[in-house]
Length: 124
Image 1: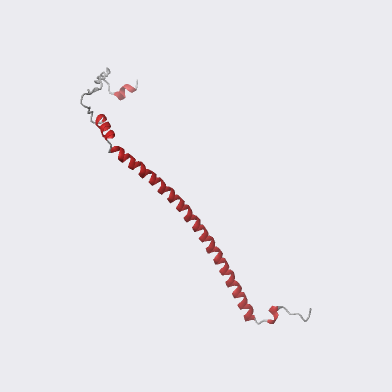
Image 2: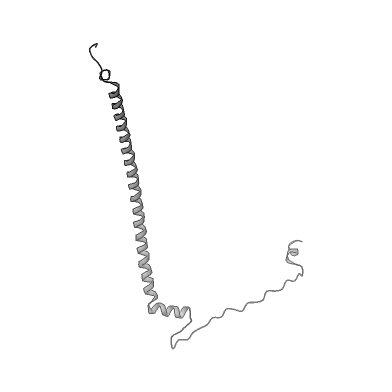
């Protein structure tokens, strides 16, 4: 094994330093690519989740809009107008008799028999 030399023994030191620098640069590049790829994949996942949430919100708002439009159509119908005229205004159709229910008159509460203030009556 006397005649064999390792590749490093026959190369000048500047070539070995250059090889190490290139290797270190390649390692940094690989790490950079892996990190940016992972961050990109994470961001893409977050964007997909946000898109799903927004789509669900849009569907909910569309459903609410349809309900409000149906309510608006009902409130413009003759049936609703008649119902409100009867309930809120007490109107009746010609030939019908309206009934007004009066609340019972309040009964006065009895006056206290003890002339002392209430806080003195609490203590014996």
